[in-house]
Image (cartoon, rainbow over all chains, first blue to last red; front, side, top):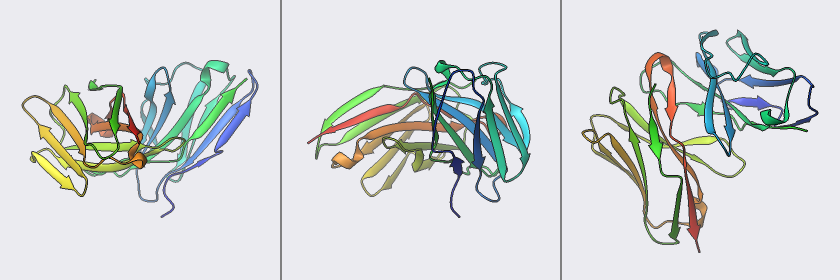
Length: 114
Length: 110
């Protein structure tokens, strides 16, 4: 398996623009997580899905952020409109629902909002 | 929610042992994990321990678990410059959630 695949690897955009980050989880994994990492706040969980259903989105910063998982092999995280304080590395991760199963991370999307 | 805490920085000389510590508040997990993040990369699973174990050794890595004190540690023997990275402890919570520590940045001085 190719692992968790995220795209794009890097995104540079201007304030006010819409940003869409994409994730393909590992096949067979039924839980998917979106994290954000910054120097100031470390690793923060934004939202996670079980079987394509959002379970906990309490980490989503505000209404400008939205996440979808239309099927088991694809998820998006959208920021609209983007702001400079959204600049961070965004990670997608997936795991099976089995007890003890590990969490596997993608390589992340480095987002810079100018 | 769960609190998982780590010290932020650790600096060691090449060849010495490194010990990275982690404390947590909820003892209900069955597994505890250590992840490694190298610069510009995602988190990679390094090792893990089942909660009914006190110690697990894997080559240069030794994981110690003190359930009474809710304390987890990762010891890296003969630390190399390639071990410089951020190390996260992590534990599952309810509903498939994963809780991560703040991460410990390990710097290995040649």
